[in-house]
Length: 133
Image 1 (cartoon, rainbow, N blue to C red):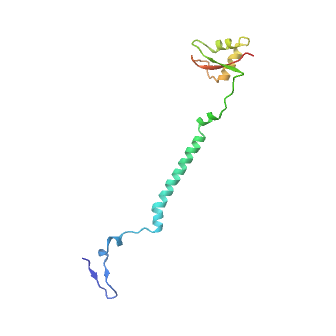
Image 2: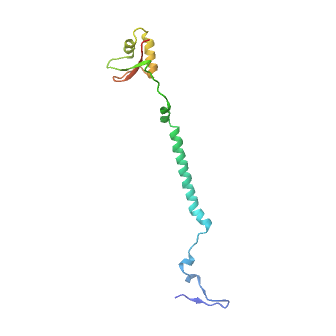
Image 3: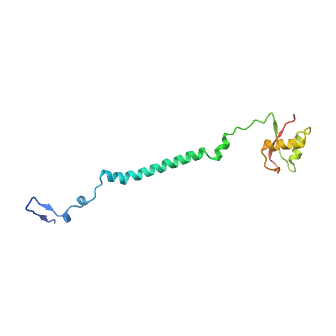
């Protein structure tokens, strides 16, 4: 049972210990709700926007994307494809492709056309050799 306190100044007042729990609960003000819900939502939104920008800008500037923008040259009128056989070298391929020219010049053309870093060839490798002039 709750005790009523009668004061000479006015009507009956409940003591603090006898108030219901709902009356004693904290209440959020508008500013409190903004701080409690708004700031974390703003931080999550900013993180999502920055990560989306990083993905988009990273994919546009990636080195893998650079290779797709280069147009391949049509070598049909200048070179013919040749498959390297076991035991072939740049010298033998150059000598067979254009016997009328100096072999060193033909080897230099083959290296330039195929962007070869070394003179080592693998069996089954496809090379472009210059056509006879």
